[in-house]
Image (cartoon, rainbow, N blue to C red; front, side, top):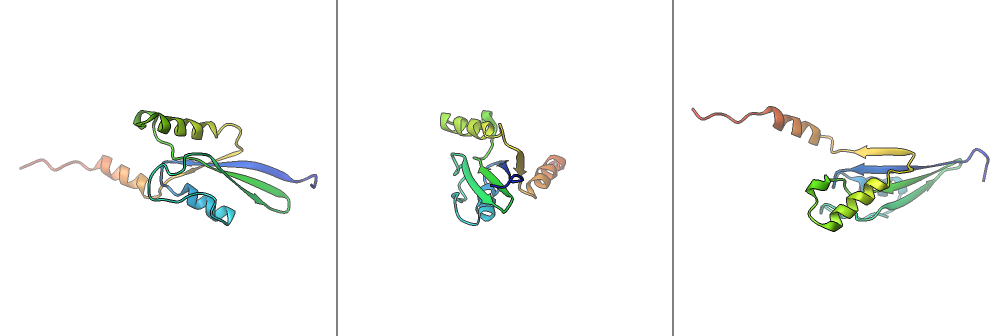
Length: 117
């Protein structure tokens, strides 16, 4: 290995079903993570490695992050805790969001129901 060889961890986090696993599969160049319309399909941290001439990037795909208050089962709580724990020791945290969901939430907050006449 060369002296200038660099390596680092990139952890992808976000709500369920924002495309974390799809992005990991694209970055790695093969299907290493399950992609499904069903939320919380990813239950474990999935690692994918990309090696370049002078660097290596280890990507971590995490389960969707939801509020612990909204988890229904002990398994869901464990999955969320493990996802959050994966942030320890990572070099880069990439937060994925659905681009239009932010605007949709804002629109809902600003809109007021019509009062009856």
